[in-house]
Image 1: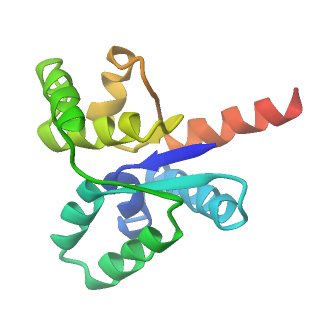
Image 2: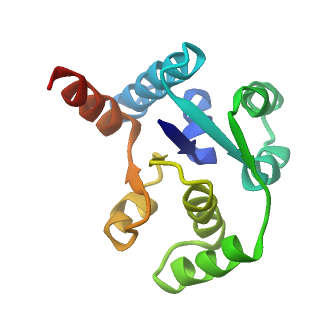
Length: 148
C-alpha cells in the first residue's frame, strides 16, 4: 500500500509535544514510519517534499526528513498533469503548496495522503482520487482492516 505524507506530517515529531493532540499525531506518524521500514507500507517522495524540506530552518529535522527520500519506493517529479490538477485543487480552496502535494500523491497513485494540516483535513471531502487522512485515523482504520 503506497502512502504519501506531506511536509506537515514529516515535521510533526519536531513540533512542541506538550499538546496531547500533537503528541498523539507524532506517535501515530512514528508508528507508520516503523511499518514503512518493516516493509508493510511503501512511501512516495516528491519534488515538493524536497522543495519544502530545503527551506526547513531546523537542520536536525531537515536531515532526518531528507533520509526518507532514499527509503521511498517511488519518487515523483513535476509534470503538467500535477500542475493542472493542483490548479483545480487550488480553485477549490486548498493552498498552492498543499494543492501540489495532493496532486503529487494522486499522480503517483498513492492510496492515502497523510497530513496533520487542519486546513487540508477540513476540505478532504472535495478530493475523490486519494484518501486524505490524519495519521491517528489511519492507524485506527488500519487496525480495523486487519481485524476483519
